[in-house]
Image 1: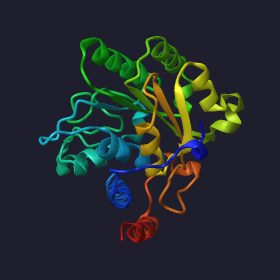
Image 2: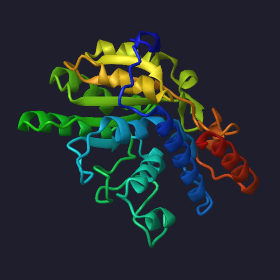
Image 3: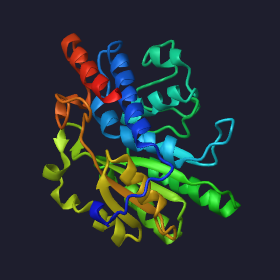
Length: 280
């Protein structure tokens, strides 16, 4: 299924609020970038709409903020967007983001289990989907009504353990597992489509492994919301989200150098100006 096949009915999802939140999350990550020598901005920005959608559109929450659903950021180097979302939700204290990557803080460059809101240690790429599968299978086996949402990178799909999980999920009929592939066409500093052209088409491979699959713009929050809400629900579901590395800041977009770098003073000021226009 492609973007053109998705009937967009985003009833119940406030797209304008999502747009403003995502701009605010990007701004917050930029603020933290001025306190450390470098951080993974590009991959965090490419998955911003995906992570926001999971927490604010797909995962159910009760009056206390607790959810029966689970989120895993398998692409651990993109954790800054998860940290920003958890801070905004009140799960992470603001001072912890201020202490990012310091000996006084609890937040590292990859997520660690035990940090509030972090369900698993990730960043050794290829492990997160397997853990997500185990959690989803445990929920189903125990009669727990809980979905598991997992975000992987396209470079991470080169790990054999990821494909073992993909095969097993379909074999076990784990229909409460939703996978988002942050398909920004970069693995670190190289283009996936150049280094591994046989990797494509991603969606067809997932479908061949027994998943219900949709390929869609990964910055189209309403489209992704509708795709997940309208899934048949009898198979594991994969969203191959076409994204842009560094999305949201013009000079960062689709530029490999922003995989791991902090903007200088002039770049930082320009980025804030651009995001301020989106937040209006």
